[in-house]
Length: 234
Image (cartoon, rainbow, N blue to C red):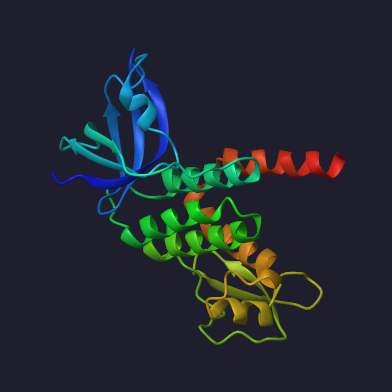
């Protein structure tokens, strides 16, 4: 096969010197494969197969678990540290948890690469992650529909809760919280990176992703929560 652009999402030891890897690839989406000998000391592949580093790979096999054949580095690893590194961990964990195996998501791959470029900059992180999340949801036909439960346009002066089963918004009585319709109408225009809408955008994408993630919490979210607590108490 022709070498495929890819990024490593997750790696775990397999037998004595190998690893099972989860890859995000350009044309085949998420691919699971055995990387033989990659855990062996002195292995050249061990230094290449790192998160946030652009790769070229080939594999063989017809089942869900492939065998990695070619592994080449195709550029520099994104320089992530601190909160930026946790955001990268979140992006990888999200892709590995939500994407079906071998489900082509070329636009998600492109957005993932752009997200890695944005994560070193604190001002760009939240917007880049929201854009990645909504593109992922769109690729799975799970993106929020900015209408109410009767498919009517949202009202700027009404508050809403997200209706996960129908991917829309349910109007609620005044004083019960929720999200104001005016903010949702701004998001409906695609303005997921507007600073004033950061909290609303995060709330909406998290609610939309919840059915796909299930009850098992994301480790990256817990680590981010701990980091935020340490900052508040320091």
